[in-house]
Image 1 (tube, rainbow, N blue to C red):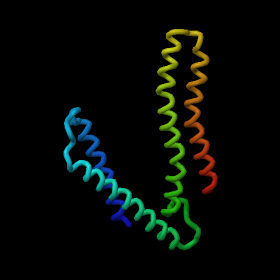
Image 2: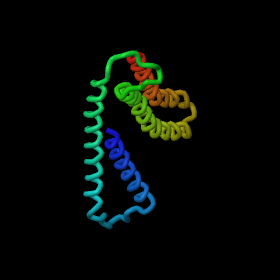
Image 3: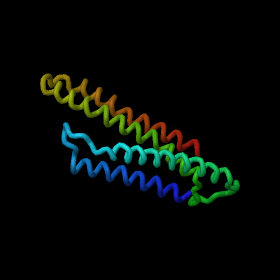
Image 4: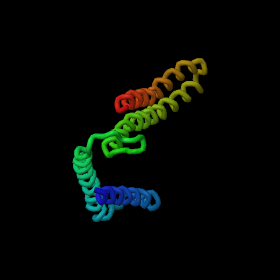
Length: 149
């Protein structure tokens, strides 16, 4: 199972390396990208998805094969690790969503405040509503953490 983790890690490192390369040497507009990029990125994505599915299927088998017993606080099984990752996903996605919401709302709020300073209180309410998305994700994560205890 560890070789699948290695394959997924190499796939992610390849995607990150391509992103850094494209950031340093962007493709000029009007110029076609090399033909091998499409196949390379597709194969990288296929490797990542296949490795993830294989890790999931093999990991579920290992978790189901474990004996039920009293596990100490430092003994974290694959199932508990996957549960903790799954619990962290709502906070991560809610934080990204809040960041995407606060950007345009904050820019519009600054534009309105520069025109009409008396609108300051109303713009704070709108910013608070956009930031509330992250708090909702945090609440969901806290509720889910209570379920696995």
